[in-house]
Length: 440
Image (cartoon, rainbow, N blue to C red; front, side):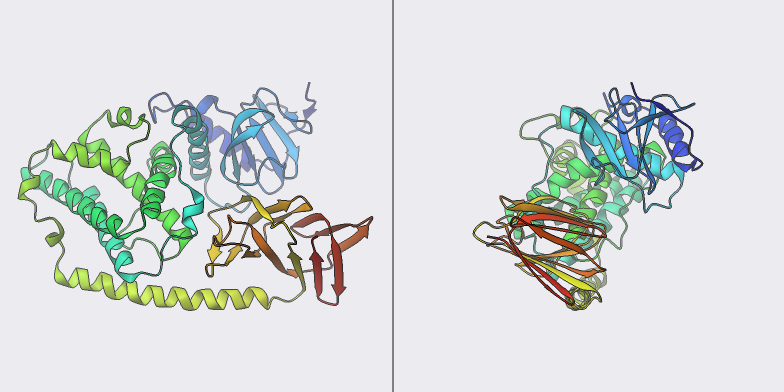
């Protein structure tokens, strides 16, 4: 039976828990019950766990708080915002250590993560293959311009007055939805099939989680006419916003649209919305893509070209800054077996080329020789095969280390530094500002 700890002086976390319990009682999605879902989060000092039937060792009950447990420091089960197993129980987890948002916003984030726990059980086929994000084409200005025009059309559809108002308002909403879907159809035809599938998968899994998240605190939609910058991480973030936008538009055309999502394979949000539009009147009167003026279309193209040029130059600068960081440089070089990705944060990756990926927050690699975890600092991986990450890693570089502790005994090398823990069978070379671990 867990012991009882005194209420910590830091009270913000308890305000987040109380706010979550309030907003989680709403009807946010059919069958979704966030108020009873186990939740775990790290606030920068302690890890809190509530609604959990069997806390892991090291957690202690908090006096005066119903079913709330605390662990000093960051528990090993909290590494990312997701749904995972904690002591064998499906649990929503979140790292709030760098968050300065209000209790409402943080509580809504926990709603988002509890929805992932719900999804895993109710909609297990809602998924995107993160392998495909690394090869998504982000340097095509025409595709970027079309994506941004699609976003403008979605935003204008959201801004049009609700159905039941004047006939012109209803037609405006239908026409802008139709324009967005027509642009998307054209864009998806030009993308690799895996890239289109990736967007649709993220829209289902993450876009709908964002939909219930924002709904819980009546927060406005995230998608804007500005859209998002180029870059793989921004492709993912944009799909959160576009998925939420499509869900809000589905709210307008069918109050029970959620029931159409349980199939195998699952139907995408844009396909579901297109099906509803085919049943509505007024589409034949729409001029679709011609809704945009020539000036708007040209402006989108010019901006896309400028942004991609700036994005490419920024990648070069960022790589140079990482490699030239002051301090000790760690290199781990694979031998016969590449290092395999065991965990990483897809929100925080920068892809420099077809071979190099900068992981800016969290990365775990390992093989038969051992493993390394890099947390809250950056690590650069060099691919061992054709895929930037998932055919294995030939080399890992971590820079900017201060006084890493390195030891070698019986052929085993261990290293500890701020944000880095490694243990491998192999050999080590140590110079003034370089530690190189060679694996067999």
